[in-house]
Image (cartoon, rainbow, N blue to C red; front, top):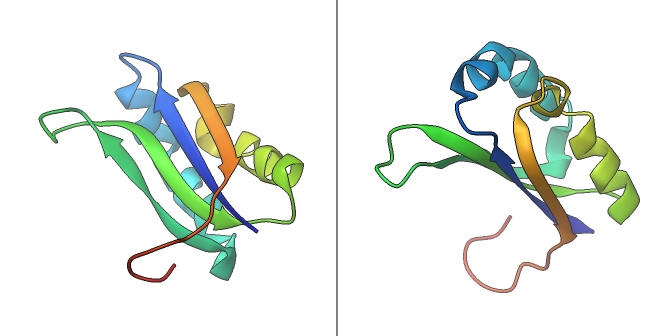
Length: 95
């Protein structure tokens, strides 16, 4: 089953993001082929990251939430809010 995670960073936490980024990237790579798309959301000017959008496969909603909760960004206290929900690909390039 596919899931989307939309994570919003706490204000003024860019350095937290930068410091945790190498561990975060390793975390994502460890998901293997179950990771479909991942990247930062950006401020309106497109200059600074202010959150994350991740599309991934997992067994169920609880497992998906647990996986996102184990992200090093979450462990570093970067996120102000996290929304994880099932997602269905309907149109556009395949994931």
